[in-house]
Image (cartoon, rainbow, N blue to C red; front, side, top):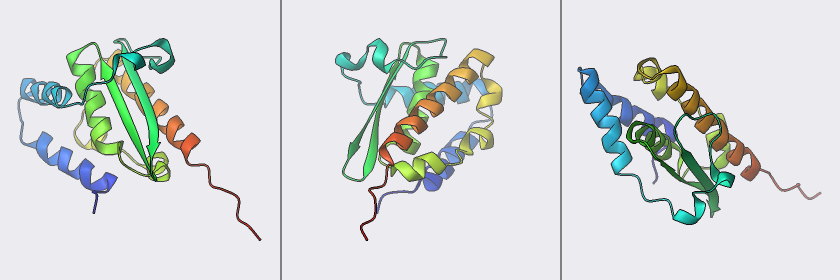
Amino acid sequence: MPQTIQEIEDEIVEEFDQYEDQMDKYEYIIEQGRLLPALPEEYKTDDFMVKGCQSKVWLRAYMEGNVMRIQVDSNTAITKGIAALLWRVLSGQKPGDIVNAKLDFIDRTSLRSHLSSQRSNGLSAMIVKIRNYAAMFDVQPPKED
């Protein structure tokens, strides 16, 4: 059975807690970005650009069965790592679960407090774009009488 959003968030918090040094935490984030599957070049266009990020971030989402898949990439290592954490938590989840996800791993790891204000804004912009995709995909068919 696939992991829930909360289970994945808990896993990331545990991994993050292994590092005391801030530079080690950044290295962990960068490593997460290296694990991210490649985004096909055809999606590295303005249509898929996340507005509000200092770095270039491209994000695509699509449905596969009853779950939403996310593809994301960035031109900078730290931003790509942050995007990879969101991908890890949210890709493969049901759209309704994504819309309602607390995403408390961001606060539990103090991730946002270690980011520049521009990167923090970029993180928020990525979350908004993912939730917008999820809300669009979470349209329930009308019930028949």
